[in-house]
Every structure is written in structure tokens, then in C-alpha cells.
Image 1 (spheres, rainbow, N blue to C red):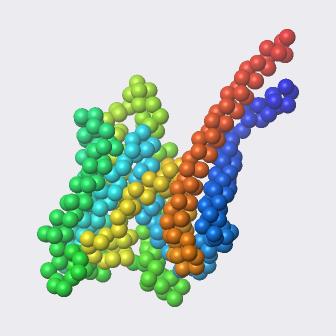
Image 2 (image 1 turned 90 degrees about the horizontal axis):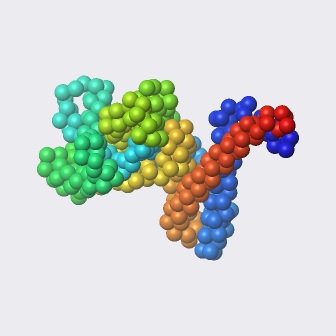
Amino acid sequence: MARAEAAAARMRSRPAWVDAVITQGVALVAAFLFAAVVGGIIIAAFGENPLQIYSTVWQFGTARTQDFARVLEIATALTFSALAVAVAFRAGMFNIGVEGQYIVGMMAASAAAVTLDGILPGFTLLLAVIIASVIGSMAWAAVPAILKVKTGAHEVVTTIMMNGIAISLVAWALLNPLKSPEGGLIDLRTDRFVEDALVPTVGGSLGVEETIPPSVHLSWLFVLALLACFLVWFLLFRTRLGYEVRAVGSSAGSAEAGGVSIGATQIKVFLISGALAGFVGLNHLLVEQGFFGSTYQAGLGFEGIAVAFLGRNSPIGIPLAAILLGMLRRGQDGVAITTDLPEEILVILEGVLILSVVIAYGIATRVLVRRRQRAERLLEEQPVREAA
């Protein structure tokens, strides 16, 4: 009993975040080990050596500077997408519409790049293009937000419907106002954007094209993604709006009783989420392609949900989770080249990893709560025992 009381006293003396970090760190390591074992069993069932496959994935993502730059390129869009999902989730809402929001954002950015060419000089054109993307995706996110607040329509249903409408809207735009008059094109697309409307690559800006060649489209948007992580953290944990967001997400009834406007907070959160979604497609649009076509990169909004879950909706965990998934995406090339495994095997491993992390964190949270409750109970009973 004395040992238990001493442990309880130590736990009370430590800040709560220390226990949380230790417990969740152990849970994360356990989740990775469990996912590695399960993945190894699946790989072995295909007749391949799991250690060799894991080594291949690691080598293809880290062997050269340009390989890791490719990983960061993939992580750029995933970070923005996951942040958009996580901000809404912090308020207890599921923004499944990031997919449609970033597609509309790319359409708005393309319209700005095409129509403002020759009107705005230099860097101001790029700034206008980025702002147009943000405004377009915010406007698309505002619709389900208003419907939820005014009519009670569930955001999952409305955002999924808005995704389908966004695809059709973009198809109409590429077929009509944004269609390039240039002949001989295989796919529908806009005119190519001028150089001033494009985001420079890191390799080109730093003069290290030999280390990071132009084929690797790592741009300064990755730095902006890291800045966005910091700004989201600051918003959630250092501002009044962030407190209201977390209060609504924890208990909407208690937050309303405390004077928080639920509807206003939900609309603000959805607009912020939409603004972040506006950056998701910019690396593909303004760095890799240089035009907007019918073969635009899709699925980033849904992949952001996986990254948000893997990163525990934390502005700190999300970029790490995005880099991890970027390595798995990069590793698909290595698996396809060096083995007979199907590329989808890494998608399966990704799913196993996400499930393992979610379950492990759930168990860790329960364990932490029980330990805290036990420590409180022991310390409350201690004066009674001493008096007896």
C-alpha cells in the first residue's frame, strides 16, 4: 500500500502533460511494432521477406536527398488536407468535404491565373492566385456550415454531396470558360500559367538542381505547411476562439451554458477548415503541372482524413504522419521495381498502421484516466488511514 501511495504522490506531482506524453509514446511504439508484425505476416504470405520490404521502403525514401525531397513533396498536400480535417474535428464536426473544397480552390486559382495574366505584375499575381484558391474553397465550405447551423443538416451528408457537385462544376468549367483554345490537346485543360503565377521549387530557388532536380516538385509550400501547423496550434491553444472550438468539441451543451455561440463557432471553424483546404491542391497545380486539366490529382481530401487520424488531430503529429505516409507512397515505387508484390500491399499496411495507432491511443487514454482516478482515490483515503 505504501508503494502505491508513493506512486500516486509522484503522479500527482508531475504535470498532466508529462504522463500523457509518456503513455502515448509507449502506445505509439506498441502500435508501430504491432503494425510491423501484422504487416510482416501479410508480406510473408505473399512469399516475400518482410525485413527486405521494409528496408526497400526506407531506402527509397531516404537514400538520396532527392528521395527525401520527394517524400516532403507528397507530405505537403497531405499536411494541409489533414489540418483542414483536424480543425473541424476539434469542434466535433467531420469535414468530409475537403476533397471538393480543394478541387474548387484549384478551379478558382486557375481562373485567377488565366484572367489576371498581364494585369497584375510579378509576385502579386501569385499572391492573387493563392488568395483566389483560399476564397474558392472557403466559399464551398461555407455552404454545409450554414446548412448545419440554420437547418441542422449533418455536415457529413452535405459535404459528401458537395464533393460530387464540385466534380461536376469543375468539369463544366474546363469544358466552357476555362477551356484552352489551343488545338491538338488530348485532355481538357486551361492555358499554361505564366511563370509569375507559379510557386518556385526549393531546388531552383537555392540553386541545387543537381541535388534536388526539377523532376522533384518540392516547393516552398512545404515550409508554408509547417507554418500552417504552428498557426493552427496557436489558434487552438492560445486564442479565445481556440478555447471555444475545443469547448464545443468536448461538450456543446456545456460550452453553450458557458456563453459560447455554438453556431458562430461552427461556421468560423468550417471557414478556417476551408481556407486550409485551399492550399491542398496548389503544389500539384502551381508547381507540378502549371495548368489545370481534367487529369488533376484527386483523393487528397480523403487521404487527409487518414493522416489526421494517424497524427491524432494534433498540429504536431500531423506533419510527422504526413511524412510517414509520404515514405510509404514513395516506397510503393521501390516495391513495384524490386519485388513481385502488388503496390496495394502498402495501402494495406497503411490501413493496419492507422487502426493500430487509433486503438493503441484509445487504450492509452483509458489507462491514463484510470491511473489518475486511482491516484486521486489513494490520496483522498490517506488521511483517513493515518487518523485510524
